[in-house]
Image: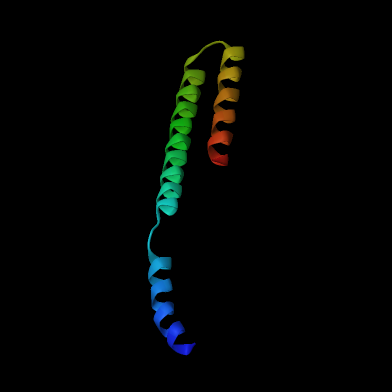
Amino acid sequence: MKKIMLVAAPALFTLAACDGPAEEAGEEIDDIAEAEAEVMDEKAEALDAMADATDDVGEAAELEAQAEALEETADGI
């Protein structure tokens, strides 16, 4: 039994150390989610800039609210 463990243990560690397809797919999904969050942040910055540029107080408040909602969504990703 000890001989089997001595042979099997290194093989198990080798398999455990390998990046499997599932791990690679998970990392790719994380990268995509991070990119989406960055895009949302950029959109929020653009909305803030539009709010600063407008003279209409109501429109500025609406744009700022949209920007805040996007930032919160991006932070949640």
